[in-house]
Image (cartoon, rainbow over all chains, first blue to last red; front, side):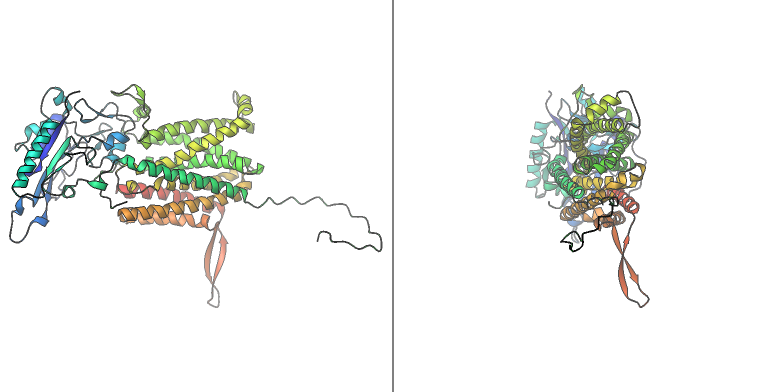
Length: 288
Length: 313
């Protein structure tokens, strides 16, 4: 197995040029969605899906603007080139019933297009909203981390095109070192909120595509803590509910069928007239 | 469960999946009711039991069809069972994936449903098929009852796992509760009882079980109500109640709750009438069993639609 590869996306130097989006579409022959005016800052891509494997988010962080400043200390207008995180514990692979989603020799998460049957279970599982369904192919798609380019010792298209080195590609250990250095540098410059997301194993066992953020992950739409759970955490509780319901239903069903009124007996055929009682006798405590 | 935050995309599971969830609940429920009527009922319940087993077959047969049609690549449906990729060829059975378990569960359940169907037709004697005497001899006794019991276990699984399938995700609402599996199971049993009451006129003698079925249905409705309370409570704690019951989905939830009223009240509803003197009085009106059954089935559809739609809106 080759050494684990990944992306380190340093959002502090992203300028929102969208070269990554264009390069990704060009290399992977993605047509892109029909243009829509979203009225959402400079964003007209909207979200990651089957046609957008890179998406530059523009986050207008008004909380950092005050009357005395228009700069916002570099945190008022955040930009981030979002992409598949290639999670170490991948929710999509966990639920995929066809085993179409596998880890490659580069330790990245890859969807085998000839195996996927388009059940879309992975879409419901991905906590980052990365995977999209294509009506054209009938399968799901996401960033492959340019698997074909990696096999030929080439840098993924987005990282190659990024003019500010916001997207860095390489061996994961090297990227970790670079990220640690950059974080220390930013902290030294006074950016106290700067932090790494996915560098350690706190989120889905670590992300092969991890980020340097200038604010809290929630500001960028990234789950943390209790919100970053694998789908399987609901397995035990869910099946326990089925088990409890089954037991109660069985008991209730049996009781309901047992406690019915006894069927009304058919009227007995008329009995022959009893013989006349002898005079002087009285009837006892018979049926009344 | 703490407040949940979701950044996911909806899988766009719509009408086919709604139909599948409905049929899976009915099929699993019908098979279990057939077993209960046969093993816990009276000899007079045998016609209703057989009707239940007969109904389970077409209901089960439609399930994989809906699942396959919903796939983006329907001809690759068998990839659910056989790994055709780099890790294959091998059997695909992933215990962490309810969809994977469900495919196998449905397949095994279908075998039991088919066996029981053949047994019922053979022992009925109305229609003959090659080997029907042998089937009647082999499955007409103890072995057939064993098939019923084991098949019912798979029936319960098929009726309930669909809720677990939704919960094992990162979708809002679905992943914020453990109650969906039990809720779908209770609703499936209730719906199966209603379907059986509706179909009873088709098979002579089945009407004899109507009272027992209505009693069981009342209990299943109570169970469903209990799981509904758990569902709403867990969603409220997770901060997802508004997403689940907000407009326009409250209409569907209202139908669900309304559909529970007749079975819970023993198929008796109360009507307020105002007399000539202006006095109000409650008059009990017996709602027909058929109307109640239809309402229960509508509630069953509404429940699944509310759960599926609200999370993906």
